[in-house]
Length: 297
Image (cartoon, rainbow, N blue to C red; front, side, top):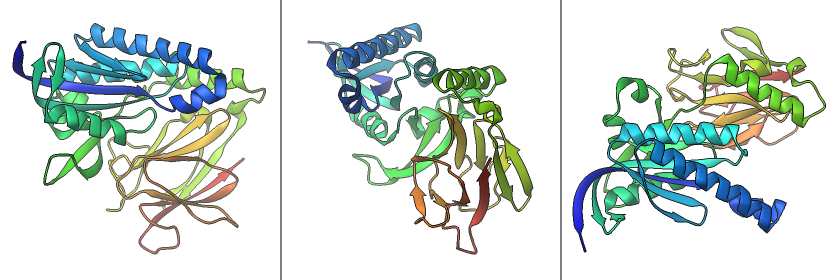
């Protein structure tokens, strides 16, 4: 037996919603789709100089010598899942001391990676502070504060981040809209979402998504000047003919529509329907909350 102590970036990546997939499409097709996704994740791990430690059902555990390689692999996996069979994956990354024993890996860093992987939702990559601290500026800038949590084994609250992987260019948006047109007989390009804020009113088209809302003016499409907002608070996406509000903030987002109870989102998403209000970090009827009014047409 050979035991080696080594700094490693640990990744847990798994297929989100696999249980529901088996029920929806049946055992054979579900297993085939999941196996295809696992194979892609394995190939992208190796392409980024990583080592697959093991696969457990619909999950891949991998290790990398450096956080930069682990983040590059995670971004490639998320982008690949978007372009491939469409199965969503969630990823957690941590960096620190590990114990390598006969091809397996142990230690607090493994536990930390597993912890943040369980926090991540579909199509999200969540990373620890130790990962961010080791990244070059280009990748560090892609990491947005996500939450403050007590990571297992630590007595203090730790800051964790969401690694942005979405392609910002028009090619990505156009490709996504084309896919939606193929799925639906409607022409999504004709749809509009009107957003009204204290700074004015704008109309959003499917081609202009993802549309980011938050308090970091360098990164967002709509700047919200309130301490209740996260730097990258939420974004509006367009999927399967619908505008979808996706929250990834610390304080959450409220959505209210006439005749319905307010919906509270925290690391969740909801389709926008009809007209209503979006409360950034608080309920829409509170004077301290920045409110965005929306209307679909």
